[in-house]
Length: 92
Image (cartoon, rainbow, N blue to C red; front, side, top):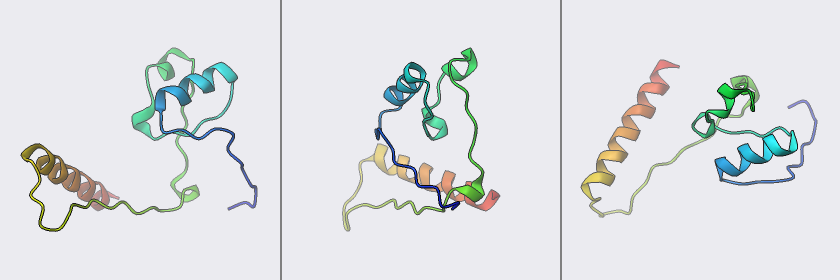
């Protein structure tokens, strides 16, 4: 929002790769909390959360094919995910 344009050099969905590359090249990487590891406690990486005001809101969709009955494990996971996200939304 400050008008500074950032052009990523590397994009990846592999948390391990991004962590290791940041350590090896002494660069900045962005990850969601689940992508953090023990390296933050050993001092190899430093983690700082972004201010919620600096991150535009996103939309997350959870869907399934119309008329499809999910396997028990998938249905349970979808239910737990929906509940967890709903309770997190209500808390904020």
